[in-house]
Image (cartoon, rainbow, N blue to C red; front, side, top):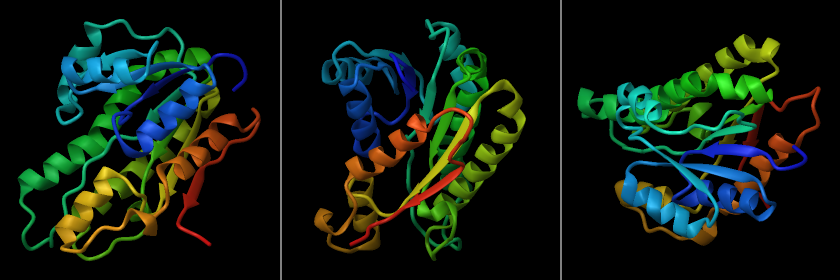
Length: 232
């Protein structure tokens, strides 16, 4: 992606999203950062000077169409980067429909709806959609049922969009990071009852590097699925 590209990014407030937004801002790309509400939008604009914000609650996907209808959206989007996500752990024997619906809404239905709403500017730019998935999108561990189901679903969403939009020049990439040192990881350790040592896990910056590698691949090829995990 040479020249100034325009990106819409969810989850820029922490972890991998912050690392990706920082890298893209450093190279002069135009950022449209997704925020849950006006207060968070203000925080993001302070953290990323020059960035635009879009506001809507990803926990309520059915309201995103209304929210976007009342805001200016870029005419062309080179990159739609789905990085926001929530995690709730627990055995299937204890997970209630409320938990299932909350995890699926934020991690799967919201990305599907945001993709649907932003397809016209993506088509105009022959842009790229990147879904930051998870190792849990490829395999499931005990107590990870709801989260893994949402991420397995996210892979299905990405695969469907890739086939449907190829003729419109849209590339689609799923990135599957292993455990990464982020606020979400700290919460996971808390839920698992384990002490958290960020030094044990990948840095958000290393995952951001893989996202940029996918974005910067020359036209005529696409990275469909990319696993990145802690290594030597």
